[in-house]
Picture 1 (tube, rainbow, N blue to C red):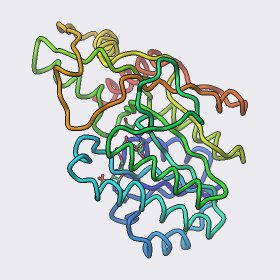
Picture 2 (cartoon, helix red, strand yellow):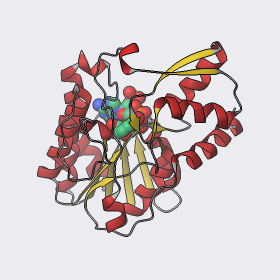
Picture 3 (spheres, rainbow, N blue to C red):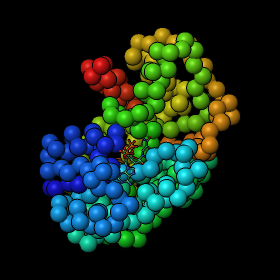
Picture 4 (cartoon, protein in one colour):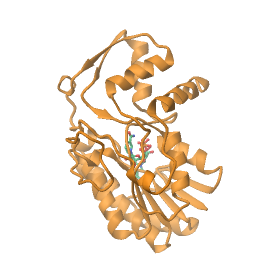
Length: 282
Ligand SMILES: NC(=O)c1ccc[n+]([C@@H]2O[C@H](COP(=O)([O-])OP(=O)(O)OC[C@H]3O[C@@H](n4cnc5c(N)ncnc54)[C@H](OP(=O)(O)O)[C@@H]3O)[C@@H](O)[C@H]2O)c1
């Protein structure tokens, strides 16, 4: 298949490109070549490439900044997504929109299923949810794939931040009252690779299996990388941020199971592999 990936310089897109090229002809385009907010450009390039599938990974991902740049966040995450949805529909391509656990408010105490009610707390989550709604109303062949706590080799993420901080300090406080599932880009990319070959359209939750707090995640990062540092759990209130975050955003993988896909491995196994990969690339 011919696959076009938007947001080509992003951390997920880079690993997607690497994994999809094993089986497909891939066009991964960054913002400079394919600005999703520019409808004319989106149409021109999509018509040139004529892909069978578009994986729409581009997004305004500044969760805190979005609180003060609301229109920019909506422009990219909602209207940019609308543009991609309209054009993919025009050429009858499948559309795979990458979305987020932040569409939920986090007040649940058991994992969210794909068709549970959404209620995003902040601008980023609201603008991504609006993107989902536009995909659902404009596209007939869509996958919406919600993921969470993403990390990979390319780009800034929590794992890299923790390792960097460990090199600068000998004590660290990390939030212990937000629970979610870390997700390795490589594992998500492998799942997306099998998903897009099917016609099993709909909403999917795709994260590494299992759940933890940011504190537990940080502890595991240090254990896996053999870093010794004093780490203390703390509350969200101790680290006020502009954007509210869901307290509990674990995603149940009902759609993966029901549609017979292989689930992603446990987050701890994925983290172990990632740390090895990180060391190899040092
Ligand atoms: N990171 C997470 O923890 C997480 C969690 C859940 C869901 N997601 C979703 O997963 C997807 C991939 O995230 P990621 O972690 O790979 O994010 P990322 O590294 O920030 O990549 C996003 C990419 O989108 C590009 N972009 C921004 N505005 C654009 C525009 N107008 N036109 C075209 N491209 C544009 C950015 O380009 P520049 O480099 O030029 O800014 C960036 O390269 C996103 O849809 C995100 O919402 C991420």
